[in-house]
Length: 299
Image (tube, rainbow, N blue to C red):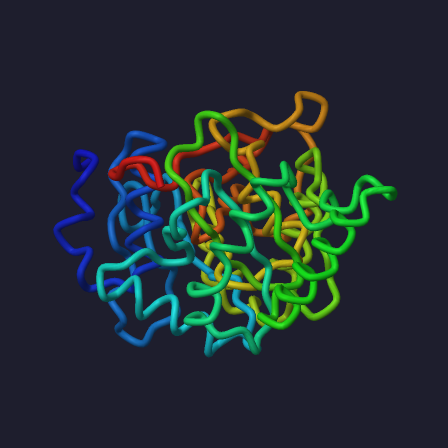
C-alpha cells in the first residue's frame, strides 16, 4: 500500500469535500486514501483504501445541504475561498466566548457580522448564555426589558436561536453560523441517539440512491462520509455536531453502541459539520470521535 499522504498528489482534481474526506480518513486510520473517481462519467465511488479491483475500503462522499439556504451559504463559501473563515467569523471587541447562531434563509451575512457582536457582548456582560437566561428573574424588570429588546434585534436579523457553546479550553472567541427552518429552535441532544437516527434517515432518502449504488462493490468495507453543510440537517443535529460533547470526548458510554439504521451496502459512516473541528464515525460496532481538521490548528 502507498504511504499515508499519497492522496495529496492528486487532490487538486477532486471537489473540496472529497479532498477533505481523504485527509481526515488518512489521519484517523493511518492508511493511504487514493482517488478512485476521476470524473470519467462512469458511476463509481469517490475514494478507496487498497487495491483498485478489491479494495480494503470503498468510500463515497455525499454532502447534506439545504437548498433554501443557497444565498447565505454561497456568501460564506466565497469568504472561505478568499482566504477568510468559512462558517464562522471573529467577533468585535467585547465578546469573550464562542457562540452558535441558527439563522433563516433571508439573513444577510454583512448584517450578522456588523450587528451580532454588540448583542452578544451585552448578553455575556449579563451572564447569559442564551436570550432565555436574560429573563430568568421574573422580578428583574430591567432584565426583562433587555431580553425583549435583544430578542427583537436578533429576530430582525433572521436569527432563530443564539447560544454559547464554548468551554474553558475552546480557544479564541468565534461566532459560528448555521441554518434552521423558520420557527425551529434546537434542543441539543445529550447522547448520540438522535444523530444515529438522522444518519439512517438521510442515507435512505431516495435522492441518495445513486451514492448507495456506487458502494455496491467487492470491498471489505464500504464507507459513507457525510459533511453536513450549512442548514443540511435538523437544528438539533447541527447543534450537537458543534457542541462541547465532541471536543475530544466520546459520546456517553451507554449510547456508544447505538447503531445507526444505515441501509445496505454501507458498513461505516463518518459525519461532521463543515464548520466543526470534530466529527463522529460509526466503525461497525461503536461510535468514535475523530479530528476533522488534522492538518490545522484548533478552529
